[in-house]
Image 1: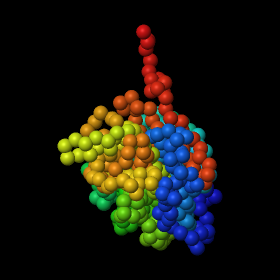
Image 2: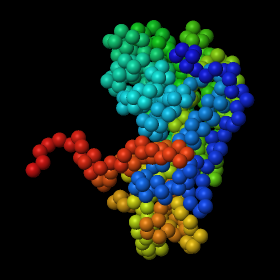
Image 3: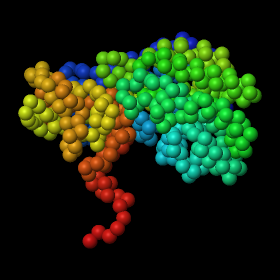
Image 4: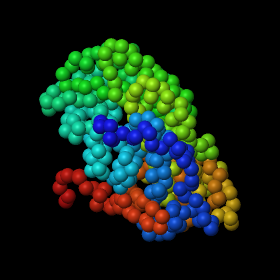
Length: 440
Ligand SMILES: Cc1ncc(COP(=O)(O)O)c(C=O)c1O
């Protein structure tokens, strides 16, 4: 990567704020939730439900919080496309200077289509195929974060076939049981499929130094997602810096250290991570090592900037339960059922008249596991009323499916008083597109 692509270390030391959770992107004004200047009820009328709504300036703010916090060190913010890969959002982040952390050929396609500079793209993931590697080599990406010895060998082979060198980092498994809230979002210990054990890393780097088709570029780690504390990052980064020292003593110089993503956002009252505190803890160590820092935030940039709007279809009482049945379900937002993820849910409109009750908010999908919230105290809505499911900008639309024959929702981006459709609602034709065979 050219120096010009990195942040200028002399800029931004007087950063105005590094808090990720400065303002509420969806404030309640005169009794109704809004995005920018627009009441959410108006957006639901115009675009239908279920509907993802994103607040554009809130996305910018969160990206800029990272770039300000780390301005004192040469760095690359590689937004993790998997969190929300909408082209308009990617384009917006690219125009602010963001790179991309990708995990597939599909995300490479998205990122380049959206104008992310190839030399700001890092490619993570345990199962890159030959075809995907070749595509990324063709694009000239910044680096491959390699996760196994076999992958490294195949990468070298692909690069040799193309007559190029593949820049790479090894993703180290630091064997840290990161304090992520769910086992499925912990990636930093040896029982997970991710990364190469630290004990094997030096041997692999030594092998790669002499292997044709490879260029040692960096070292990488990702400890998990929704990590609230700074301390596990410091531990992981120190481990990587020790490895970098060992490699340097061996004549193997690195250009960058990639500390991954996973920085916590505010799903509930617990609060998100203070990126300023993270930066203050890490910058001195990375600067001393003379390494560039790569960060891969995903949810920290988009989660709080998005809500899922859903309309109440029915109320039903059964046994000791009260069910609020909504038009959005697990096919639209799978985090509650897949990770036990908590999303704050609130009525979009005025609720002073509504009695508060303990309810399950459930969707139309034929699964007992189809819910947005269980045993939640909510002002009991009337059928037809709207609910906002908060902090849904990351791993919301990105994890939607067509399960139960359900078209995916639309996505809307709001800038002040301007609402733009950035993905149209799927149609029934979309559901069967791509299926081959005779129709009688
Ligand atoms: C390698 C890697 N980098 C970055 C991320 C982004 O994590 P988050 O969206 O929690 O910041 C992930 C998430 O799975 C990941 O696996």
